[in-house]
Length: 258
Length: 258
Image (cartoon, rainbow over all chains, first blue to last red; front, side, top):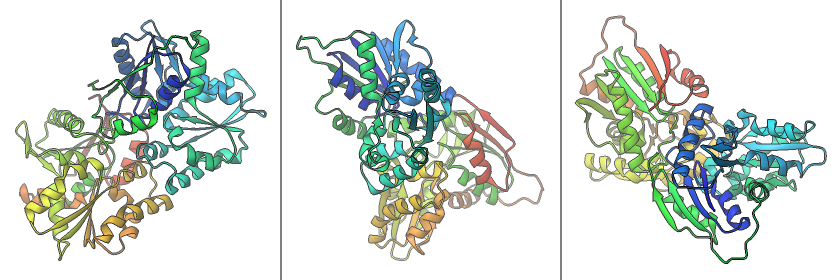
């Protein structure tokens, strides 16, 4: 199976890493739209436009299935296919995983401004359970902190504590990391929320795909392959990508123009 | 005179504000490439590509002169015209202003990673005075802080103090704010550098244009006009733009696709 995945940049690699961990071996085509990142501070129309261009590119690589790893792009993509190819987004599976981690149905959401404003998580969760209450906090500075590699830095701790205050006041029982960059800051975020579970998109989406596509770990010893495409030059991106994907390695690195 | 100005986003409005303050009345066309911001973390090739598209757009608006307000874009534009229209960038005038503020010729530079890596300021200053020493510090988080409006916030103070340490250790005598966003954070930055002068691009460029173009305040009572174009929807941008440009107002707001 060939699986196409796109994200605005580095963050989606946390989702790709989960798929490499959990799915049967597959050939992955990953697109990071690094020339135009970040998406989360941009308008719905711009995000939809970029999403369509990215899906067209992945289609041109003959993939069987496509994944929108970016929460901001997922939030505005309400279909389940694109030009007859199935498309998975992170919202539904992540919302389901969050509900499994609550008793009183109080869920916290940290996400980009675009994702929060889209109300995508709020709508999906209320569709799954009309009694659930979502408290959302736009956390626009977490993406730049993650892109700068300020992992577990005192400043990252401070901004994390500030963002989660709104959620803690509402006694949420778990916190959705509603942006694929946020797992990169998990040390700071876990300190900020104490012992509350943090819900990540990567594993939630991977288990969802296994169920929906009837996948099972094959016994054959084939290894997954990973082709990476970016819209800006690699540099910084490649260094981080290699760290995030460890122990997996990439088979090719390519620069494209969208 | 019709003057075209572009920046990746909001920051260039600090330069437009200086031009409105200091230049004779003119008709300004301002382009903020908000769909693709920020530029300062992107590669030379991508920045050059966007710069060419932006200058083409401004040309299509029949401007007599063009200004690259964005330091990161200025750093990679080494010509003085584009398709026979004069182009001013911020690097030269800002470098000259910095040299006027030193005795021992020790200059500090805060800028985006793209601007620091281009060596544009370092080269220009050494061209103007081969004995001058520039200490540069890439400050990638200041743009997101400014775009989020965290003006004079404790977190902005902390990150500012961290960035200026390298410069203070070298006993610099002034600090170039080598990104048009940074004047928006001037309260925090001034606290961080104590009584050192902060050198802004806006006034430096305006005085340079007055000299180069032989401009003088005309006695006629014509008022400047300002047309604004952005590549992403206005929202947030318009609110901030109005604050930054006060007491001036804009004559039109337009969304375009580049």
